[in-house]
Length: 390
Image (cartoon, rainbow, N blue to C red; front, side, top):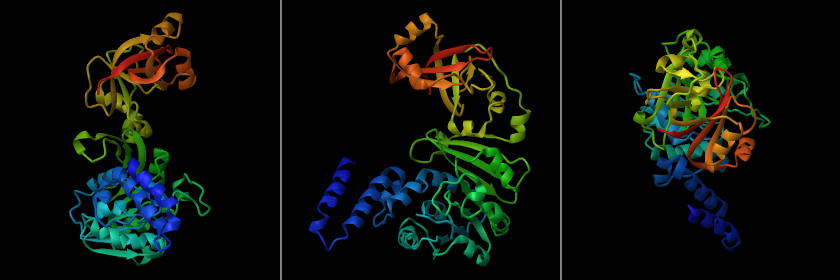
C-alpha cells in the first residue's frame, strides 16, 4: 500500500518529463486500484478494469453491500431482465446483474457509460445495453423488467446534500407507481440518514425495508417492492461483518412497527452477568422493546439501550460483554477506575462527553476493558466495567 502511494507521488513529480503520457490518467488508475483493493476486491483482481474519478469511487457501493443486495434476489423465479436506472460506476449493476440474462445500464454521465461498456463484461455481465440519458427520460420507453434498481442522488442541482426522499434526484416518491408497474421486483437504495418511520410512511406498497450496516456502521437503507406488499412491512436490521459477504456471520433481526408498538419493555436496575449493546442497524431501526421480548433479557433504562442477562444470549445482534464491576463517580469509584489506566469508554444516556469523562478518570483509550457510563431504571448513574464476550 505504501509503495502505491509513493509511485503516485513520483508520477506527479515527474509528469513534466513525459509530455506524451497522460500522467493524470495513470495516477487516477493507481489511486483507483489502491482503493479497490479494500472496497472492491473483484475489481482489483480483474485484469483490464478502468477506474473513474476518485469521487465516483468514494460514493459507489462497496462490493460487500452489493453482494448483500444480490442475496435479496436469489429466490426470484425469473431472472431474465434487470435495469439499473442510476448506474454510476456500476458496482451494484455488476454484482447483481451477473445473475440476470440481460442488464440494461442507464447513466446520464457519458464517461461512466464508457466505463460500464468496458468493465461490466470483464466482471461477468453476460448481455449488456448501456443507455446514456437521465432515467426519467428512459422510464417512459422502458419495457417491463424482472428487476429494477435505482439509487437516487442525495444532492440537489447545486451540489448541496439532501435528506428528504422527495428532495433526491430523481424523486422516487413521484416515480414509484410507474416503477412498481414496470417491475416484478423493485429495489430503491436510500440514504442511511433517513428516518425509518418516514421511509415507511413515504413509500406506500413497501414489501420490506432493510437497514444495512457494515462492521457496525450504518451504510444504506434498501426499500423493496413486489407483489407481496403489506401494510406493516418487515424491517430487517442487518450487520455485515468482515470484507466478504457470509450469511453465517451476518447479524440479522426482523421486526415490524406494530410488533415494536405492542411490545412492553422489561426494565431493571440490576446489572447482571452479561451486557448487550445493539448493533448500528438495531439502533437505527429503534426496535428497543421488541428485542427485549425476543431474547428474554432486560433493558437497563428506556433511554439507555443497553440490556442485561445472567444467561448468555450468544446470537444477539450486537456486541456482548461479560460484566466485571459496577462503579459510581464518588471518590472511591473514581480511584478504582483510575487504576485501570486504559479503557474504551462509551456514554449511553449519561450526561457530559466521552473526552471529559476520560480526562476525569485519567484513562487512555484502548485496551481490553470497556466502560459503559449509563443510567439504570431507578435513575442511578453508574459505570459498568466489562470485557468483550464476542
